[in-house]
Image (cartoon, rainbow, N blue to C red):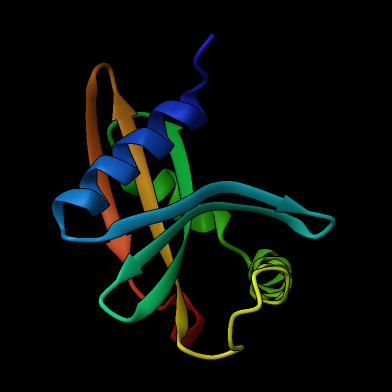
Amino acid sequence: MTTLGQIGEQAALSYLLQQGYTLRGRNWRCQYGELDLIMQQGDQLVFVEVKTRRGPHLDTASPALTAAKLRRLTTAIYHYLDAHQLPPDGWRLDYVAIAMNGVNASIEHAENCLDW
């Protein structure tokens, strides 16, 4: 069975691929959490947190990215970089909010959310 989160991740992935990103990985897990999408944009590695909600409004998904969640994601990112022997710089964390209203999806993409 496909969950709402899986549908949202697929919508986010399709959107990012259309924007010229390349998929490097998805749903990477460690003790600190899960990295939803790992993308490449040019020479920059982009970790993408995807939040999906039902309803017509994106503001229902955006508040899900709290300071505590950002800390956990950052720790997971450094574990990913270490596990793949990648340098600790040259990456960013993006956020994609998906609002599902029936079969339609509204997408909001915020780049480099650590600078908010």
